[in-house]
Length: 342
Ligand SMILES: O=C(O)CCC(=O)C(=O)O
Ligand SMILES: [Fe+2]
Image 1 (spheres, protein in one colour):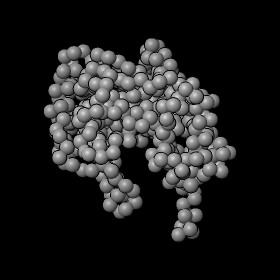
Image 2 (tube, protein in one colour):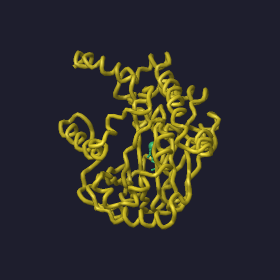
Image 3 (spheres, helix red, strand yellow):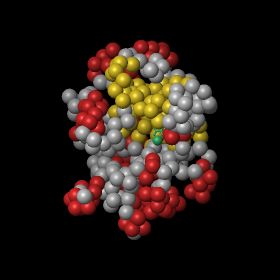
Image 4 (cartoon, rainbow, N blue to C red):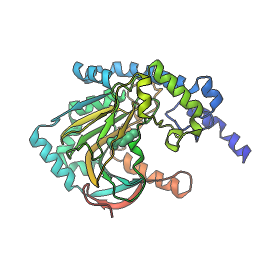
């Protein structure tokens, strides 16, 4: 067994040059000795430097105002994103859409995702138009720092559907040590006490204080809670001021609000005090943060791009079937976004 582990050493080492983030699963990335020497903070610093260079090359994709908002806050928010008629059409098409769905349960909350492929887009022309629009394309690319299309889903957050522990996403955390994009176009109004998205403005910057915090966490990472030890570091609200950061901001917003955020900044989902359903067009992009180029996305070529989410689901199912990985995303067959969990 010990020998088998050593055979994996080249793999672990190679992962240092990728987006791999789990301190618990990779003994190089998780090594307290190496992290004391600066391995983790070095990765975070390098990733931030290269992301800034990539982003500079994508600056023409967004307005000066949006660039300033992103630099200051780590997110860009647009109320009344689509013209009212176009939004009404998009919402009606998306809410009526029935498609193969996956559900993941975390504590008392279920996240449902319907993949968007070409066939789905053909039945939802208003969604296709939105995804092809310059603002959506520009913002997701710029915030991500890659000239590539993120994965897009119709996502539903079904809060408090189980009698269980609170949703672990309600703890403030950074998803990764490097820039990564998530986008929400809310199809439903989001109330204060029904699980709004929460973000700490300015927390996307790898300041000296943030890096010092990352360093301390990386040294202790294996002893932290499970999600932190897997590389999504949790932070207590009381620690924010020591990092020079303000209070988190809750996005209590009407439907038709777009938020595009760099989720290497601290964020969470606010608690929901009652069963509620938040529905959104949701996008997610993650690539190797050390790539010097912005394009050349091997999964972005026509023929692969539209199918990649379904393929990824299938590959994960296979790997999980072989006992190699966990697969929290359950195949639940056909679902519409708003129907209850069954
Ligand atoms: O859905 C939300 O409000 C945020 C959840 C979260 O932490 C994430 O998507 O990374
Ligand atoms: Fe997150």
